[in-house]
Every structure is written in C-alpha cells, then in structure tokens.
Amino acid sequence: MIFRNPAGAPELACDECGCRWFDRMTGACYECGVAVTAEAQAEFLRELEAFAALRAEVNGATDRKRS
Image (cartoon, rainbow, N blue to C red):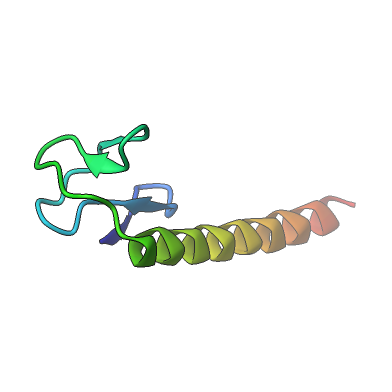
C-alpha cells in the first residue's frame, strides 16, 4: 500500500495492517509479520522515482526563476 506523507512523498505501508514500519533484515512488517512483496517494493520504487523527478522539475523551475 502506498500513501503520501504531508510533504507529498510516497511511503510504503503494509498491505495487511497498514503499518509503516518494516524490519529491513527480514523484509516483513513489524506489526503483523507479513512479508513485503516484490510487487509492493517495485511499486514503491516507481512512485519514489516519479516523486524525485517531480521535485527535480519543480526545483529546476524555481532555480530558473531566481536567475
């Protein structure tokens, strides 16, 4: 499950319980123990890349306006 934090950045949450805390060693949710799927990880990375591109575009536009 992907949701947006107040700054607009994507955050990954557990598909089962909605928890945002994951054990990086096991790749599982701290709350319910469900493993993060490869599909969820891939979706999160796509969203993160899109967010980074948007931020770069916005920051580039802001930098050009200052020049």
